[in-house]
Amino acid sequence: MDRRRGTAGDRPDDSDAEDRVNRCATAYLRDAVEPSVSAVGWTIGSGPAVSAGRGVVATKDYAEGDVILVDAPLIVSPRTLTGVAESPVCPVCYVAPGLAATGSCAGGCGLPVCSDRCSNDPAHADECRYVRRLRPKTDGSRWSAAVYNAVTAIRGLAVNGGAHKSFLDLLQKKFTDKPTVEVEELKKNISMKLEEEDEQIMTITCKIMDANCFETIITRNNKLISLKGLYPVASFMNHCCVPNTMHNFNEKLQMIVKASLPIYKGQEITTTYTHLLWSTSLRQNHLLTSKQFICTCYRCCDAEEFGTELAALNCTVKNCSGRVLPVNPLNKFSVWQCKECHKLVTSVEITSLLKKLCPLMNSIQQCPKRFETILKTFNIYRNSTFVVDLRLKFIWKSKNNNLSLEELLYKEKSCVEVLNIVQKLGLGQCRLLGLISLELLKVIEEKIDRFRWKTKTLNIFKEQISNLYKISVSVLDGDANTSITKKP
Ligand SMILES: [Zn+2]
Ligand SMILES: [Zn+2]
Ligand SMILES: [Zn+2]
Ligand SMILES: [Zn+2]
Image (cartoon, rainbow, N blue to C red; front, side, top):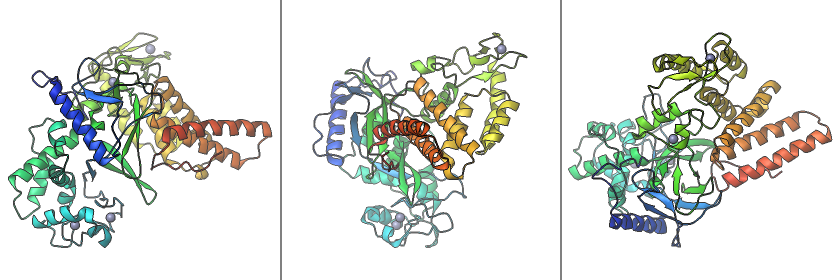
């Protein structure tokens, strides 16, 4: 989704080209989403309103929660497997049968298709026939990881043969001279030679996917499955670390983009390509390695990130209770400085500290007690990005009815603290606000169930639940992957 390609000679300032992009986008949405898409409240363009290259600009005002666009995936595919222990999902219906139960397509394409029903699914027919003709080296029974990892590339061939092949030209491609691993691996694992044109389209598809894909979430057998989705119109949205939109996916895997903050006519419409609660250095690092650009948004320029101090480390000077933050957050070699005693710390020292800290934090399982001990022992700042990450892990993974009272209260506190950060960062009606509000609501319900409360306390709880319910419904309405069942 990186639109940072506004280099000289590549400036998309040609209004004919922009007309073409907008024509393709509206034609696509009309075909793939809604025949009545005619008046859209945005345009794809370049110029001073846009942070880089081409972007999406509002042509009318939007209030928080307004739907800006509904986009359909041009390609959806499973995530690439990176090791033999990883289990694939069925590339047709996306259930995850588990590694042991994974079979191979009866059609002989070598893909780990889950059932005869999926093998015979008309949606699989073309790619099944195509891959079979390539004669995958699977001795007829095993499934092939190489073919599986090339599903994205293979699906590009269908796009090229379809009505919206123009997106293969229009969408940004990740710039790399390296051969595309997925296509190279496929070539090694088939007996036939790929047609030159097919190979070219496959390579382009992989590069487009790398630069533009969104994480698409789908629910199968009560499990959330993470896929890659190419949403050709939404992918024109530029990145911001305080984006003004959020998105959900509906049953049809369509992406519903809504305003998370008020957006005014003429303002750029943005999304995020990284994690909203990561500190600036983690976000910068992620954006640089995955999307090859450095974000310079107003959040990135503020070392304290609007008072959240997500990047902060505790000062190591004896008796100093200050926190150490980078002097220039945009420069990864910047010195850091304690806000209290003003001691300077070099980036080398910080890097070596973080190198020790990261594996330690990753090793912590969801046990708040152990976790608190580690924070104390290693003098970790309690609102740092690492701690927020651990809190989130605990919130998502713990099941309320299995928690001790201490753990339940810890979860409640964690939810409140995360909501606090979301608010300080000014993220508006972001998806995280909806999800955490929903979790907090469930924690309060569990508290009500466990004890006998005085009526007055009970009424306070009920009011909290009612407010949280309203927030989660307004954010997560139409989200196929969250179920907000009870209405308090
Ligand atoms: Zn299936
Ligand atoms: Zn097949
Ligand atoms: Zn930023
Ligand atoms: Zn200090």
